[in-house]
Length: 258
Image (cartoon, rainbow, N blue to C red; front, side):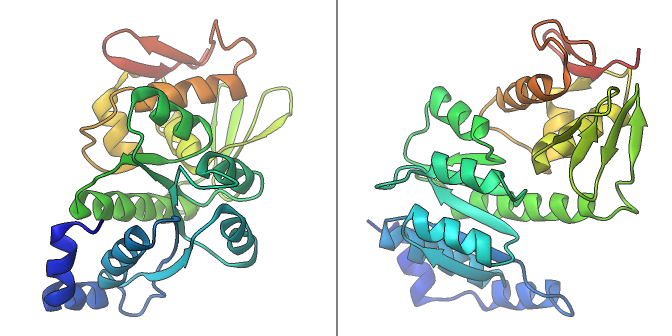
């Protein structure tokens, strides 16, 4: 069922929003966003919102087509529903992550803590429960695109070497002291980059959310913890007794340069 505000938007398209979007994208190629959802009204509503902001939007209704487009098209962001027939959004995300670091936002009617953790563990960058406010979705889209662009520029996020770990912004990899190279998702890379740039300093949850996700996050409080666990599994010899990524209980986390 369409939300009441969507009907209002369709009847009275916002000229101001469209003008602002055109101005922001002037001289630049618009970001290309793939929307994956088996609910036609949801797809129509989300696509409308994004196109009003000046984005190029591709839509599909199932996971198989999503994987095909992710392979064939140059995508800047994927908005992915969780509950779909045949192949759900979690599996689609995992398969995309095997070959791409494109930012992924999960949308789902399942908003419990366990559902959010599953989405983030699958490789998602963000998780937004339905129903959601359109301004909230747009804010998260813009934040992820902005961060992805900033960290893709070597002049803004150059190679970083701390404690024998070498971060490479070009391909989102980290080389461990023994020489093993590990692939990181965009959020994993930005979180680790932020902590390594501030080695020895405790970073609060809010500082990490603002610096890594790019907005004031008022929802899932354990989002940072989920990604810290993922990073520990990738870079720590013993994730249960971390050497690099330490917890400052009740405050946040810090990277220790030993």
